[in-house]
Length: 387
Ligand code: SAH
Image (cartoon, protein in one colour):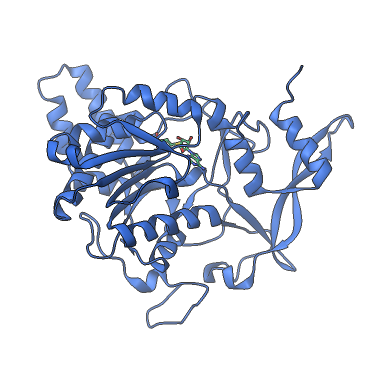
């Protein structure tokens, strides 16, 4: 029996039931149980399509481990602590973080490790990476399945993989962008193509900055990402703790098409290789912070990744790691510092946002100015409010 490609299955589905939203397309391409990018591929590392911060250097996970440990100490060293990672990839960040966390064996004695991962294949990789780690992981399909308890949560490059809807400014308002079919130039086969669907973004969901956008502008909304932020925030409020969300993203809701594909280390047409290319969209940190605040958690002012890592002691850690090593190793370490924190590399494009249960602001973050994350939906203008 021949297995249809994911592209053929998408074409069949669209010809039967009509055009699909960008969000549905993204979800199928990334997480289809048989042919999704994360479910079937080995996306990371040198042979993969992209290299994430924990794969660049052990320092990234180690510093995040130090951040988590400090919060646990500040919380008064609670027992029954749930150490949670969303989308752990190869498990590298957690393995590195656990090295730092092991500095306090009493933390390990009081903690359990929970990994939320959709891909069975990546769960296998995570199991291998964490085989000799001091905490044995439990895997979950969803964050809601993680048992109650004070929470320390980390998610690196997780939210950018969650589906977005795109809306296009037209004469009728913000019309949903969909994926339909067209006949190829040779007139033989069907191809995927972008079009406009009947749905519109409700006016209450339109950010102020988009109100004067020109026709053809694109606005992205991720109800899934916002829902995950709500679930994290609800958990923090009820169980106490903090969360760290690190991703490629922007700080204020605005227009722009950030939906992109990476295939074999090169940018690709998002419709060209369904299931074989990595699809991402930039994360809207303003929307995540707002969702978290509405659910009762305290979002911090986001920091650029470079700033965050330097404040956590990246340079000191790099110095310690390189001490007494040969010139080549030292150069590798300083290259890693540059890649993680350099403004023209990951340092400024990636942002870190912390959420807490509301009883503290996790260092090195600052409290957020609340008018900056005012709700669009129930928007009451305040003095100094420029959203
Ligand atoms: N945090 C890792 C990997 C980032 S890639 C790193 O920094 O290297 C995104 C990760 O999220 C992968 O592990 C992917 O399988 C997982 N993932 C994507 N969508 C998911 C979903 N809806 N639920 C759970 N995990 C998901």
